[in-house]
Length: 162
Image (cartoon, rainbow, N blue to C red; front, side):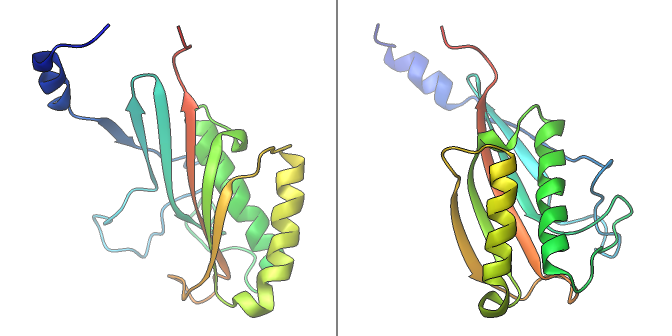
């Protein structure tokens, strides 16, 4: 069934629904950022039964906004994955819904092997197959004590297919 041209024009004018996401039980915003903050912890975009979560760079930050596991790349990596998991769960998603990550390491030459071991172990625990697409980048992170920061994109259906 073809949609008529006027209906298509009307649909093009409907704004895409989006809202900020967070999970303060496991991850709080950094208190030292200027207020109001200039970004959301993540955004949820809903498109005709498909939900997309765009999770901002996430690191080893606790529920009080403090960096934890200073100097321990493996523990920071694990906490970062757990923080992302908390954000996913707050929106009804899991790591199985993650389609892409971007991983920022303060020193990629020194830390990539250990980071990749932790990521592989975590993904195996989550029984991910296929694995998310991913990019690794060396970067100066927003706090000098952070060794890793990860962004994630998840996609999942909220309405059953008919």
